[in-house]
Image (cartoon, rainbow, N blue to C red):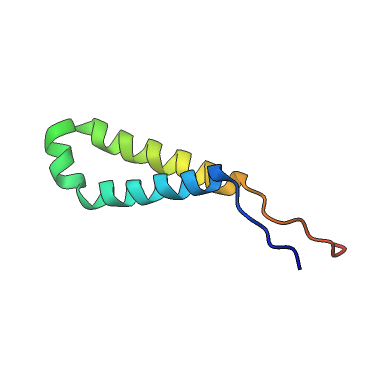
Length: 65
């Protein structure tokens, strides 16, 4: 069986998603400092993270559809 390894962009996407989760926990205090930009930063981090995670296709299947 082939051992599939994820690309570095997949792990970068996971790191961005983890960072957006941490930002979400502190969104109240960041809102007081950054205002609307705190929410925009969260949306950008989550969106780019999800794009990078889902752009990794994973191992190809040899089974017919």
